[in-house]
Length: 177
Image (tube, rainbow, N blue to C red; front, top):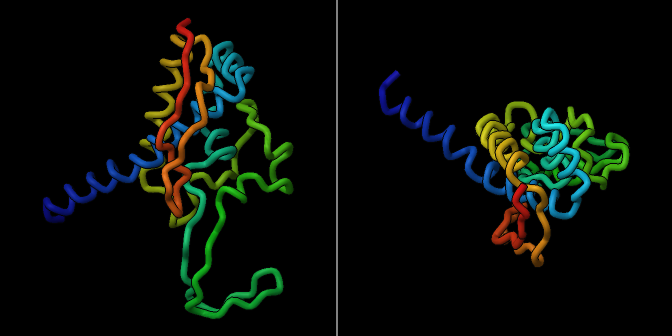
């Protein structure tokens, strides 16, 4: 493999995790500011760090939609979709589907989140998801040791984006531990 391919691969891994990490952490902090009981639950039981990030991806995922083109004629729930059609998958809606998630609109870091599609699914899943998870878990681990509470200090501003649930600004105040 030529050296430039290796450099491109590393660049792809690093850049793939940027949006999911930044917006994932922002959405996570927003969730904790709205649900102080969940923040206290995490502070009391740091074994919930991994579940907390996964639940935030399910509850308020970074990637909300994905667009695809059908490669063949498909019948989906009785609807015929011809080859070459543009379709959209609403990942944010899937992560709140009441047939799969009990109390789907509730942010609960004790929840078993296996099956969420916060990083998409299958061959089209996010290339940077492992980096995003690792970085977010490190941030949560440190914050849970040093921050007693996270409180809203205004309305979050969202960055206009067709695919990402992106944070432009997130006014919060923190109380040190």
